[in-house]
Length: 185
Image (cartoon, rainbow, N blue to C red; front, side, top):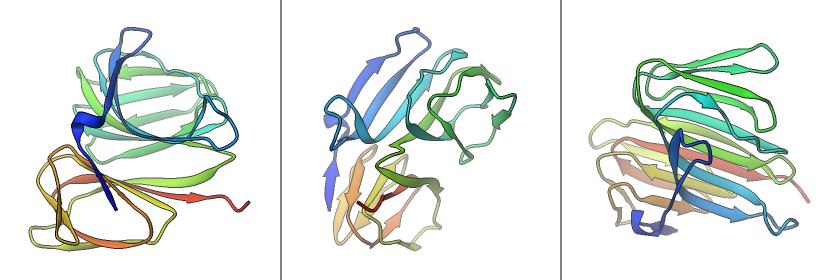
């Protein structure tokens, strides 16, 4: 178990000027030096526009705050995120145009190199005092959106990220959970 605090996260503006990303976690790809195997981030989206391309990457996107967005994909599909907690999945190489539904928003991104692993992203919102058992996985990332989390007597700071290997029991408030499984070698 490892706890990362917001002071260790990397903030960066988007090249197109439409928002900012806070990178919470990056696991380098074992075969490609300049690529990642896993990346989890929070984006502050100020305006609509095109998404960046990430060839060979599967993306999961969940709405944290705001009225939402509609994504128009180059293959003709439309994906709508209009309620906090919704998650959509798409490939990183497809062309995407984003339209905001009512102003700036924040979202959670989980990106996985397709040749490295698979994952899932979900919003956790347990009742007060409820404990949540996290499934065994190669890597579990838990980002605290608000409230307080504890695991094995250790507290996760507000806005922090908990990295777990295997399963664990956690309790607390609203957060985002990424479950990651590596592909067999």
